[in-house]
Amino acid sequence: MKKFFSVDDVVNVYDLIEKALFLKKKPYNFQNVGKNKTIGLVFFNPSLRTRISCQKAAFHLGCNVWVLDINKDSWKIEMNDGNVMKITQEHLKEAISVMSIYCDILAVRTFPSLYDKESDYKEVIFNKILNYSKVPVVNMESSTLHPLQSLADMMTIAEYSSFFKKKCKVVLSWAPHIKSLPHSVANSFSQWISKIDQIDFTIACPDKYDLNKQFSKGACITHHQNTAFINADFIYAKNWSSYSNYGKILCENSDWMITENKMKLTNNAKFMHCLPVRRNIVVEDAVLDSEYSIVLQQAENRIYAAQVIFLELIQSLS
Ligand code: CP
Image (cartoon, rainbow, N blue to C red; front, top):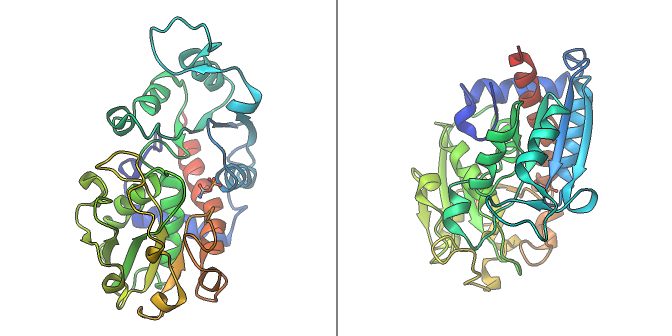
């Protein structure tokens, strides 16, 4: 593996999930692999899980880690080319090039604008980062994708389905939110699920919230949440803003909140969410606090998702 931008960088998704689950059992099995290696974690946007799980993953491999929160601790970065830089102090080109000199793997988080659809969906910023970096790059959430989250989600489904032993029904359900949110978790989840033959996948969302077909192709798409929940084995709740009316909130209907009553329609489904989650807007307390909520297992698996990716990249360094 030379970079980790999306599931397309993975040779065999099943093998990767198996290896990540092995690392969960034996986190220190490769503790010398990262000796004298440094991982740089660069955040253009806030994070709790991604930041700490990546640090923990790197420690398990014996790597050094540095973390930079660009907005708090660095110069104001110019993302566009050709501008007279009267407000910004450093261009992305120098910033990424320099930071990549200071590490062996560079992991970056950069969210979408949610107003320039073309630029966001062409991943203009992340492609520049891939281009400017002198070392392998890991996507810690870009404009359209969040592959470390999706890998952790696949691990979690694998754990609760005896490694996809029998066909299971997974429903990605849109849920309400008060802010306009990216599509990255939903896109990425859909993309990874499409690689798992044993999953029967449904996306439930209000009208005008259909995801970009590039990511949702192969899924059964419905605008009827209750119908979707019938016989589901996993309910994955997530809000996203509109794709067709880009970045806009078109539905403030609390009827789409995940409730105990809706979970009763399922086949004793597990409840999933990537976190952070707004209680009693996205999901009722009773669901999040129930024994069928597996959100903490998902968060724990973020460590081993990051660890397996760092391990693959370190092993590929010449
Ligand atoms: N799920 C997730 O990526 O969490 P953070 O935004 O806290 O990193």
